[in-house]
Image (tube, rainbow, N blue to C red; front, side):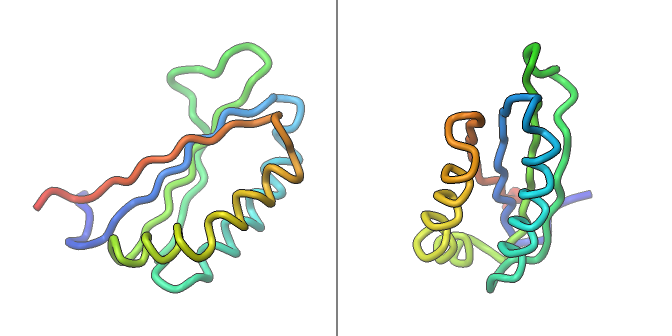
Length: 107
């Protein structure tokens, strides 16, 4: 399966304390729905990372958001990302970390 021309995948990889996994997933479900309602988002999937396995006492998640293109991602990052990221930090503090990357289909 190949990416649709012009679309991008915005991937968020989350490392969290296993003790907050259930609470974090409940929050994350609502968070993903909110983000997917924004202009330019086509959908998302939340995945559990199984390989490499998380460190003892940790859990690993990956969220892959599909967007219509780089312009939609740029608008999200400028207009919505700071507030939405701050909500997670306000709720869970330093009990998780997130790294991000952007993927695009080959031209």
